[in-house]
Image 1: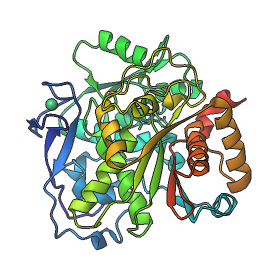
Image 2: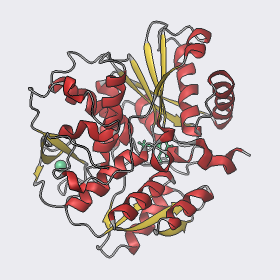
Image 3: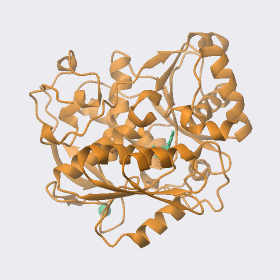
Length: 392
Ligand SMILES: Cc1ncc(COP(=O)(O)O)c(C=O)c1O
Ligand SMILES: [Zn+2]
């Protein structure tokens, strides 16, 4: 899709979030070579760029082009990702005595999840830098997205997924021409096998080992605030696996402040996890600034949350502490109850990850961490229809 935005990207360079080492934007980079930490994209924010200029732009994530890293518009590989609805949940507001409750519903994105945003950005940037083959370990959604965007870009895709991944994800990838390998074990096992098969010719786009998926995911933050007419919510609850969305939304809020679009940021960021794999919750309870490996993660119907050792661990913890947020886990039974309640009340069949978020909200409301006059945004990150076999 081509848009007629005359403005240019403000992208300047990549920088290690941990040691500050700067990396040249014209070369292909993965993560910091000194300390194995993720790199972040930086911009020369031009304060003359007004949020009013967004009016009339295309309703997709590319409306924020100035703060995205693609330099030549020709390289945008777009299937129409982003600008998903922010729905107000009037019935649940009144049932739970919450002044404002919203759902950012990501299920309508291309290939059925928020992963489209990050992967669209990563594939666009890879095309801009001349990459020919890409690879990814995935819980499902990121694999579907990579296969679709690589098909459109003419880039080869190699997908590694746990055996327990719902079957539609494999079909999705294969119809797009990607090569799929099913792996015994969890997403970390898939990542290990992938690394052993990669002779160096595949560009690895594992969560936060590649810097630009984060830039796509951060557009959720820009959108939520734009859709709330530049009012910040008090709380954002996010289903956290690798953590890109959580970190990305927080990055967007900081950028909007630098741009002069916001004066202060009251928003507390909350990571929701499953009880059988909750490394973020455990690290938060122990007040750690890193996340130890979670041994033997249990199977879950929320496949995207079975991430035992997120690579962006320090960034996840920093986001929770800086925003005065918290981390909560929910059980499989609670996810099922939440799916049922949400569907019967609001007419929305959430993904298991989205249902986990709803349960997380209820727990935090019950213990008064969320107050009745807080304004709250919940994320539903994907379409439930990919998960039918988990639910029958
Ligand atoms: C539907 C869904 N929600 C949430 C997640 C976790 O996302 P993140 O890596 O941004 O924490 C995933 C990851 O696979 C997912 O597919
Ligand atoms: Zn570093």
